[in-house]
Amino acid sequence: MSITSHQVVSLHYVLSDVTLEGSREVLDDSRARQKPLEYLHAHDNILPGLERALEGKVIGDTFSATLAPQDAYGRRDEALVQTLAKTAFSGAELNPGSRFQTEGEAGPQIVTVLAVEGDRVRVDMNHPLAGRTLEYRVEVLDVREATRAELAKGHPLPPGTEHAGVEDRKVL
Image 1 (cartoon, one colour):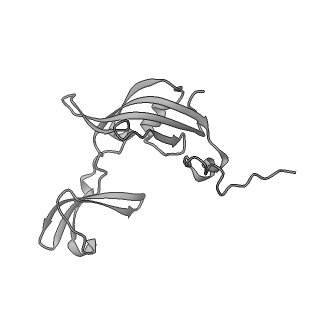
Image 2 (cartoon, one colour):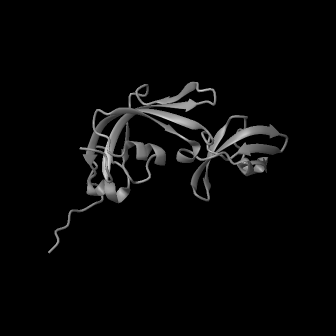
Image 3 (cartoon, one colour):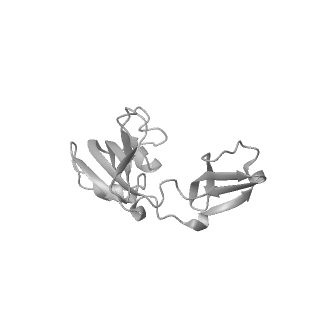
């Protein structure tokens, strides 16, 4: 069965950052965590560029996909580097490199603290991987039809909960 819309896909991946010099730094490895990624295809659960690369693949396929910033986490926007009042952080411990998740205009947003200077905090609201070219090395482990409940929820459900909250109704 090849990967198409409304299917649950399970895969292992290695995510690397590709520098201008062509070197690669591993950022994430699903095998190291011993947990494959499972997602619902064509439901915006993964990066658009990776989803396009997976379209039509079958169980056992292995491949690499290099994603330009616009197909991954977007280009960096220097306007998203701002200085805010320390009081905006509700007394949280602030150190350079600290990250917080906040609600942005387009949904959840990661904010990284760059510097703390007195009562001011310099932050970067770009995604930490914005502006970076990424390479995914992927192995497709499983492909199956999504359940009605998974389609209703928009993501895979844990085993044993596939029908939770969705009733099978007979149409007369």
